[in-house]
Structure formats: structure tokens, C-alpha cells
Image (cartoon, rainbow, N blue to C red; front, top):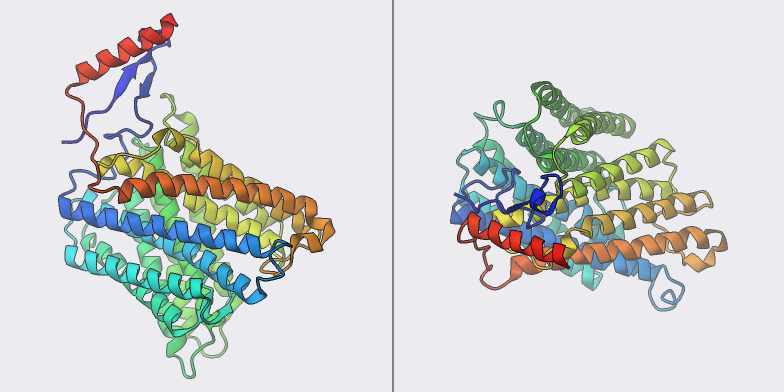
Length: 489
């Protein structure tokens, strides 16, 4: 039994009988994220959620350091080396630790939702390993240990502590993925579409780890950029499949049979790079990086765009009153479209690439933020600052859109990515960088709002639970009196 849905009929206030929720995200909404979770599974889900929110906080701190290092005032005492170290920390925790930790949340929940047993012992071991790895990476980056390698997707520091941390984190998340897939091995075909998408993401993650093993298993081993080219691409398949599942969950409600069929086929397409990329690492000779990128791009973009279309059409056709869950859904889908458009304009090594991945990665982040807001009431955790949660996705997403516009504009004036160059040293990009700075500020404020709201809720002593009202009739009576009082004013 869950908490009752808190509702008030607006027709008593002369508002055409539309339903609104007393709480933005209803304690017993139709997301289906948490159905009768027992205490041990609930604790495991909360643990993964804490790790993911902490990772987003660390990513934000390093983002501030990166922006500060590129200011003219800071370049007198902040060296280029620490700028690159901070960039490694930002990308690692925003692109890898945050997304994969939240995938751990959804993988754990998906097994519980479909009533399939998964090993709690393995679940806790995977969480503790991932947490330990994240702590090691954060510590090494904060101190500035090692030479930064700014490779795409999986940048790293050449230091044993960071390397061990990354390996332990990958191992822990891999155990979580295996635990999820083993639990669903007999029910994946009959599972809901969002669970199928999560399953495809878990398989893609394991394929990414297999590629990493194959890369270092060849005679002499591969260098880090080559070894992580396939791994990084497959991790983006995991992130895209996770985002697709989040879109379907945020949409809510029952989809028509034809839509479910289209989504199932789209999700199946995620397996194209999962199967193909490891084969390239088994071929003799140098790695064919071009075909790896092309196949991964196709196997990532086509299914995600298919889900984007189906969910978008369903969202437009819904005749019921708008749900607040649609706000992060809309912002995420808009960011994905903008990031895709930036890619179509050509990726030539300038700041268009940065604009592209801030759009696509930002889309993943906003979708997962929306899931976090939906999930807290199901976990019986009261959200801190609930009024701000209504606007937080708009603030964060709007900031990202301005940031992307600034980066895209700067690329027309020679703005480079990963460059340690003070904005004021290139007068032609002062305008674009001003827009970038405003967007970055709004994004940081939006991210801070999320981290404070959800993070404080998760870390509050005793995890003060939501209390159900004594009865629906009492709740409705209070709402009627409040509405009538507002009408008389």
C-alpha cells in the first residue's frame, strides 16, 4: 500500500474541473518506480542515489574551477596543468560517475519492479566498490596527482590512485549490471519497454568493459586513447538507453500497442554497436576508429531519435491536464535536439563539439533529475525546498541552452575546445563567452538547486518520511477551505 494521491478538484474554484496535485510529484504517482520495496532494497536504491547526487556535486565543483581557470584574473596563478586536471575531474564525474551511478538506481529498481529476485549481497558490494572508486578518483583529482590525458569520453590522470579508482568504479558498476541482467534473464522479453531499454544499456556497459579488456589484452597493449575509443562510445550507448528509459517513465501512462512495438524495436537497435564494436578490437592490425565511431553513432542515434519521436508524439496527444513530470521531459528532449543539431553542423575540433556534448549529456542529466524528483516520494523521503523543484529543470536547462549557444557562436570565431586560453585574450569571442558565462552561471545555480534539494533530502538525519494524511476526505476538506479563502480575497 502506498500513500494516497493528494488531489483537489479545481471545479470547486470555478476552474473547469481540472485536477492538480497538492505536491508537485505525487507520492503515489503513475511512474511505477517503486512498488512495495522492502527496507533492504530501499536502502540500496537510496545508496546509489546518494552516490549519483554526490558525483553531480563534484562535477559542478570542477566545472567552476575550469571556468575560473580560463578567466584573465586567474591565469596569473593557476597553471595550465591544473586546468586540465580539473577538466578531467569535471568530465569524469559528469559523464561517467553521475550517469552510471544513476543507472545503478534504475537497474536496482527495475529488478524490484518486475518482481524478479536479485542478489542483495552483490548489490551492496557493487555499491561500495563504486563508491570507493569514486572517492579515489575525486581525491586524486582534487590534489592534482598525475599527468592529465584529455582523451574523448574517458579522460584520465596518469597516476595509480586515479587508475585504481576508475577500475574499482567500473568493476562495481559492472557487478550491478550483471546482477540486474541475471535477475531479468527469464523476463526481459515480457518486461515493460523502459526495462528493456535499461537492459540494453546494461548489456552495452558490459560490452564496453569487454572492449577495455580486449584492448589491453592484445600483444603490447593499446594506448589509452585507442583503448577507450570503443569503450567511450559504448558508454554513451548506455547513457542514451538510460535516458530513453527515463523519457518513457517520465511520460507515464499506458502507451498504445503500436507505440510499444515501435519502442521495442528501437531499443533492440541499441545492440548493433554492442555486438559490432568488440569485433573491431579482435581484428589484426591498427584499430579502425572511423568505422567504430560510425557504427556507434548509428546504433545510438537511430533508436534514441525513434524513442524521441514516439514519446514526443504521445506527449502532444495527451488530453489530460499537464503533469509536472513533463517539464524535465520536455527540457531533456529539447536539449537532445539542440545537441543533435550542433553535431549536424559539423564537428571539426572547435567548440561546436563542446556545444554538442553539453546538449546531449545535458539531456541525460535533466531526464535523470526528473526521475530523482519522482523517486523521492516513492522512497518516502520528503523533498527539501519543493517549491524550487518546480523551476529547477527550467533553470538548469535554460542555462545549458545559453551555454551551448555561446559555444556554438564562439566556434565561428575560432573558439577551441580543451584550450587553456583566457577569454579576454581573444577579443573576437568576448560576446560569445559573455553568453557562455551567463549560461554557465544559470547552469551552476540550477545544478546547485538540485544538489541541495535532493542531496539534503537524502542526507537528512533519520530520512524523515512523508506522512500520509489521516484520510482523503480530511485532505480535500482542507483544500476546499483554502481555495474558498483565496477566492474571497
